[in-house]
Each structure stands twice: as C-alpha cells, then as structure tokens.
Length: 294
Ligand code: OGA
Ligand code: MN
Image 1: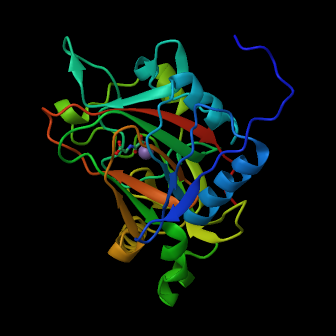
Image 2: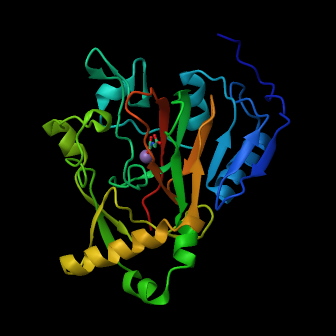
Image 3: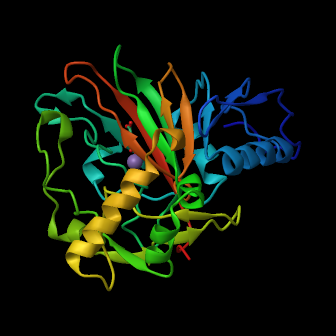
C-alpha cells in the first residue's frame, strides 16, 4: 500500500472533445489509474453534465481503480443479480455474452430494450460506467438517446398529455421475453423479487444538477402511465418512445479497446445493439446511485 499522502494529485493534461453526433464527448489523455485532483475532477464532472456521455479512451485500470473513480460521483449500487458480480468486487457487474462450462459469466441481456439503469428503483442510477474487457470483432455497439432533446422537441399535444403525470417502472416488465443463450436472464429468487417491487416516477423529470427537464420513461422498464386507461397509456408511451430515439437524438458508440464509457442515466436512455453469439464480449459495469426523481 502506498503511504497516505497529503500532497494533492498532480494535474493531468487532457482534452475534452465533443463528438460529432447528438451527444457525447471523448476525453483524451487522461489516466484514470491515477487519482484526479479537484480541478481535473471538476472538468470531468462538467463534461459529464454537458455531454451526458463521456468516453475515456485507452484506460488501463484495475477493477478497484474503476470503483474508486466511480465512487467520486456517489454511492455505488450493487446489482440484484449476485451471480454476475465480480469476485471480490461486488460493486462490479459483469456484462457479457460469454458462456463457460455451460454457465454465463455475466449478464448477457444487459439492455436489448431502451432503458435507464435501475429506473425500477426508488433511487435510480445517476450514471453508469462500462469498461471494455473483451470486444467482438463486429457488432456490440451501445446506443444513447438524449431525453432532454426529446423533451425539448416533443410536440405540444404530447407535452400536454404527459405533463404532471407519473409512470410505473418494473424490473420484470420485459423479464420473461426473448430467453435464449445470448439473452439469458436467470429466474429470480423470492428474495430478489422482493428487492425489485414496482415504483412510480414522474414522466418528465428535472435533472438535479443541470436543471433541465428530460423524459423519464423507457420501453425497458416502464409499464404504464398512472391514471390512464391501458390502451391510452400504451399509445402515449409508444409515441414517446418513438420520438425519444429519433436519429437526431442518438449517439452510437462503437467500442474501442479499453474504452471506459460513463453516461448519465438522468439525461439518456441506452440500448445494447447486440453482437453475434459466437463473438466474445465482456465489460465491467459500476452503477452510481442518484436522487429520487422529481
Ligand atoms: C448496461 C447496458 C449495454 C451494452 O450495462 O447497463 O445497458 O451495450 N449495457 O452492453
Ligand atoms: Mn443499461
């Protein structure tokens, strides 16, 4: 163990480069294996709030370093699927399609529907980080849609229809759909089920740090809008989903070796595009707890 030091970490020379698409920025030249000083951390924090998804290139970091960096943004959430937590590091959820000795090594179906991580909890996630461990030679992209833009450009009738309304979110909304080798979700124990009771959140939330409004519904976890007949709720949600993921709101991340991607679950929804089953893909996820949406 290095001796405790009172000297602040050295400043690093790095660049924040906005991506060409709807949202996102690349951070080049920052080494997350070193602790960040306050000024560097503040720049990274600002970039996360401004661009909603930041891509740190070429990070040679250990699981513990990913955890330490993640903790600077808040409390880490431990996923309900205990069998996919990294041994010795329960703060890391293994996201992978790899099956070894007949057993999946990680969560294979981490997001084949658009979603915001842990929106089915009272305290959904502020943001999540994925660090690439093994990448397929084709496919495996992750898509991000900007729900601030979606709200800002929503047609007036839809805005009026959802203003002030709440929606129910459930972990098991899509749970039983599409079971196959690549999209494997284990049966939940009674104890796990008790941890994922449904919750209600506003359909439009205010981001607690940037003050902007964003839609907060997604096909992955939202089941219905409170106080509407089922068919009206379905119809309205479908219109909101279609608008949310219009191409001008979406960034497609094509992974590069050792990328660490950190997105804001209060501003975006995301989707795993998937890759062919026989190509190995493995990433480590940390998930930071956020506030109760308002
Ligand atoms: C996640 C997730 C998408 C992907 O880990 O939260 O949605 O492309 N992953 O693996
Ligand atoms: Mn996810």
